[in-house]
Structure formats: C-alpha cells, structure tokens
Length: 574
Ligand code: ADP
Ligand code: MG
View 1 (cartoon, rainbow, N blue to C red):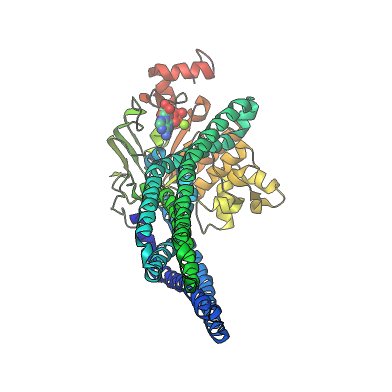
View 2: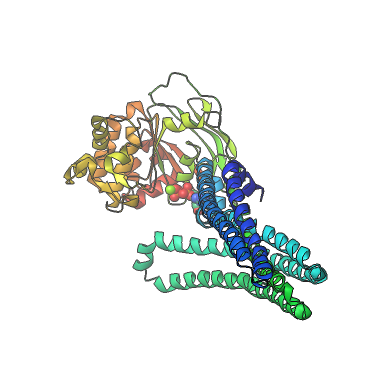
C-alpha cells in the first residue's frame, strides 16, 4: 500500500485534479433527486408550471456540470494511472538490470515477467478505479444518507441497521478474499513459467515427441490457475449479492413504512427511494473496488519484493588505473571456491592460477565440471565465497563494475544475439566502431565471409535471438562482438563448439595473431581446441587436476591423459 501511495505522491497534482472533477460529478448526482422532489411537491402537486420550469432549468444546468466533471475526471484518471504504471514498470526493469545473477536465480525470470505485466496492471486498475469510483462511492453514500436523514428523519434507525449489515459483509468479503488473490497471482507465475519454458524449448519438445507431456504440464498449471481464480471469485460472488439484497430489503421496508405518508410528501418519498438506490449502488461499488484493492495490494507486495531486492553484489569503488590501458590484463585466482545458492557442494573449489598478460589459458574438462562457473567469476556474474579473483593485481570486488566489465570481453556458451542488423549486433561491443573495425573483428572470427555472402551484408536483419542463423554463425558473430571491444581479457566459453575443424583452426589462428593485446581464457571440451594454448587448466568435479602446457600435462596429469586418449587416441604423444 505504501508503494502505491508513493507512486500516487509523485503525481499529486493530476490525482487531485481528477478528484476535484469527481467531486463536481458526485455533487451533481446528489443534488438531482432533491430538485426532483421540489418539482413534484411544489410544482406538479400545486400545478405550478413556473416552478416546474424553474427547477427544471436548474436541474439541467446541474446535470451539464456533472457531465463535464465526469469527462474531465475520466481524462485525468486515465492519464494518471497510465503514467504511474509506466513508471512502475520502468522502475522494476531498471532494478532488474541492477541485480546480480544470484538475485535473478532466486526471483526466477517468469515471475519477474508477471510482476512487470500483470501485477502492475492490477495496481493500475486500483488507482484508476480509486479515481473513478472509490471516492465517489463513499461521498455519494454519506451524502445520500445525510439527505435521507434531513428529509425523512424517521428512517434513521433503519439506515443504521442497513449500514451495519453491509459493512460487516464488505469486511468479511475482504477478509476471505485477500489470501485467495495472493494465491491467484502465484498460480499465474507458475503458468507463465510453464509457458515460457515450453516456448523456449519448443524445438526440443517436438523433436522428442514430448508434446503430450508438455500439454499435461500446461493443463495442470492452467487448471490450477482457473481453480484459484474461481475460488477467489466465489468469495465476491457470495458477498456482492448479499450486500445488494440488504439494501434492496431496506428500500422495501422504507416504502412499506411510508404507506401512510400524506400525498403532499410524494416527492420526498421519491427522493428517499432514489437516495437509497444511490446508497445501494455505492455499497456495491465499494465492495467491488475493495476486491480490486485486495488484489492490487497482493500485487504491490510482489512488486515491492523486486524493488526491495538488495543486489547481491556491491559495486567496487576504485576506478582503477586512471589512464585506461588497452593492453592485456593479468588474471589471478587465489584459492577460489564458489557454490551456487542451495547447492550441496561447491561448483568450483580451491582454484589458484595466474594468467600472465597476453597469455592464452585453455580450460578443459567434461560438461558440468565447473568451467563456465570458473570464468563467470572474472566479470563478477557471481562472486566467489572464498578466495580472491584479481585482475591487474586488484580484487574484482574493488574494481568499479563498469570499468571491470569494459575490460572484459565474453563470448558466452550460448551465443545470444538481438533483433537488429548484424552491424548493430556487433556494435554492442564498441558503440562507435567504424566499418573497418567491425570487419576486422569479423575477419578474425571468420565471420566476414559468410556475412558478405548475404544480400544485405552487414545490414542483414537478424530475428529475435538470431533465429535466422546457424549455430556456428551465431557463435562467430558472438566472438566478433567480443573482439570488437578490444578487451584486456577475452573469455571464450566453448564458443567454437559448433564450428567444423577447419574453421575452428582458422579462428584460433586469427586469435593467436592478435593475442598479444589480450589475455585469453579459452574453454572447450575438445582437446584439439585447447592443445595449443600457452597453458591449460584441467578441471574435474570443480577441482583443478592439472595446470601446464600440453607436454607437461601429458606427462603429469592423469585426467588430461584420459581425455586425450578418449578423443585423439591412446598411447600417442604430441
Ligand atoms: P561446465 O561449464 O563445465 O559445463 P558449469 O560451470 O556450467 O559446468 O556447471 C558446474 C556445476 O554447477 C554443474 O553441476 C551445474 O549443475 C551447476 N550449475 C551451473 N549453473 C548453475 C546455476 N545457475 N544454479 C545452480 N547450479 C548451477
Ligand atoms: Mg559451460
């Protein structure tokens, strides 16, 4: 609730302008029945045409004011609620960009999507609804009750009774509804999660004929969502008609009590009934908007959870070596151990090594042995729990985050490209790169040839995630993008895995020619890829089994020998 008030506070002017017009509209609605009763009692009953005309004109003018108020209120209310939800969405988005991978692992992307879309919409509905009817309902209700009491004081006890019953019903409605709406949003998360997973892996699902299984999963989530929805709606389905019933019964009682009224008071009776109807309407609206409020408060809590998430990493403050050296960096691991949240054992344990500036360090080991985890510690995608990672002699936690990441180029295991032209994608590496620089990087990555083969060359449009490219082409673009950055440390996470042997050799050759300016961390599962690196780290189960050049490892490291034997052939050497 505080969150919602905070955002409304930013738009006080618009919000109160909307309320001002709402006030005019409400006042106009309230005055109508009173003037109607004057027309009936003073005009019609006395057969006084002058009075009828006079009051009629006043009524028309009031109605016109009311209509104008309603239009203005609508304009301001919509604008305010749209503005607020837009700001809320962009705040969440910015926050997510600031969060570390650890935070995002915990919040789960699907749930973040629900929060940015559906949860914000719930809050928007409440703010919009508040400006439309929330204020109007209580004002109408109180005004109408006051006017009934003024005009027909004998109704006071009955009014109190009706109000007590209605408020009790509204309270019960909220009490039972609140937890159900929270549960409903959680089910929506789950549904989003299942859909997201299915859509992103649709090729695999089809290839393995897993449609039935996925359908079942989706049906399960959809049914749960529907059930939660029904259960939440059932609460208001029970209480809303009960509130209507109470007020309607009140009207009947009012009419019954008035059967002995003298005929000169017909107009007043009409006004009373009219006001009772307004009360009924308002109470209905109150219970409706409270339902929206219950849902919005549950949503606001979920939005707040993201906004309050403390980034797991602190930005280092030292904006190291003032003049930005382009040259290669030294990378040093000192007894580094890292475990993922909730994992029973460390993903990498006790790693120590130093990569000299300009050196190429190969990292080899079977899948799941911790290669990606190891290199993720350098650009601080995660932070090590024990030990230190140093770049140019300074702990990465002390580097300014921007500065650190500017120094490091990464071609990740899964090549990710964005919707846009090839040139645009490569420029992610260096915003103001010239065409020559772009082509130079592409040439080293052996991408220039196939790009020039496209009709529109570097202006070729890529679909989302680069769907219109082959795996190997994506990898080469991803590598070119990292190279264009001219990083001090270049991290290549198995990014030649989809290339044929000849192309891979050409890429590695190109890297070697340009390696003097970069320290390269080259990950691969293939021994032929890392064999020619200056030194090689051999990983198994998160532990470093060997560190040295190919010759040395062949002599001393059993794990390396085994990998060599399985990939290239037993017994041979070199
Ligand atoms: P490699 O790159 O050598 O194939 P990874 O470094 O990706 O291996 O993974 C090492 C281990 O850490 C694996 O057992 C994997 O299941 C686990 N792991 C990887 N990423 C995560 C993550 N985001 N959360 C939890 N565990 C993870
Ligand atoms: Mg990996």
